[in-house]
Length: 246
Ligand SMILES: Nc1ncnc2c1ncn2[C@@H]1O[C@H](COP(=O)(O)OP(=O)(O)OP(=O)(O)O)[C@@H](O)[C@H]1O
Ligand SMILES: [Mg+2]
Image 1 (cartoon, rainbow, N blue to C red):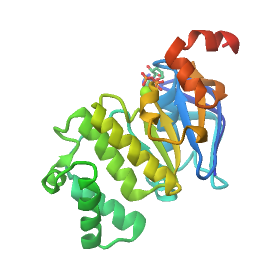
Image 2 (image 1 turned 90 degrees about the horizontal axis):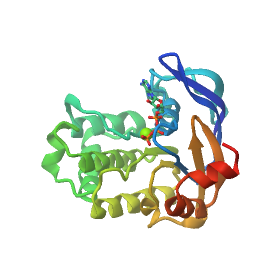
Image 3 (image 1 turned 90 degrees about the vertical axis):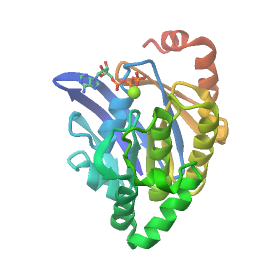
């Protein structure tokens, strides 16, 4: 469904991704780990079409089409959604209005239908109706922002969901609910690409289904199963990098 081929990406003339290959098929669950600065968010943002990240070589094929020249909106319409590592504040745009708009545009909902669904799903992520009348992320805590990203994903049910550290800065109970909601989405058929530093987010997931990739300096240097996560947590990256000569 989604194929990243020999992807090279530069930001402000500095090459950050140096040939990434990755294939995500329907129903799959991929995890990306790697040291700080190895290019995980760059890969996520490039896949979602962030204008700052320039593809200098390679392709991103989604359902047989190269999406590299498409903007983020077009990619979202096609079914690629990114939940940000640092969800941005949007002054002047209310959460409820934004999400209603999204459901109307992507799913053909009418505004009332959308409103009811948003409130219902928001309650499942511990938001009150009145929270939804605040501006997008403005004044929301780090953990609340992560839950808002998950809310958006639950409403859109994208074909591919890229989650950039949905577990960073969230408390244990929030982590648990976020993990369950990711599992719910995956079971409904969304393919997942999850970037994380820790195995804890995976606790409610089917470990058998995971494909784990390790990045170093703009490349995927190792791919394996969920045992790789445990190994990284136990011994860090050093030995793994040594083994593969990275
Ligand atoms: N907009 C930018 N301008 C300059 N450098 C950038 C920009 N975006 C990313 N980089 C650089 O690219 C490298 C990879 O960054 P990236 O955010 O992709 O890392 P990461 O693997 O997500 O790290 P972390 O685990 O800390 O989130 C870093 O050295 C970073 O400083
Ligand atoms: Mg990052």
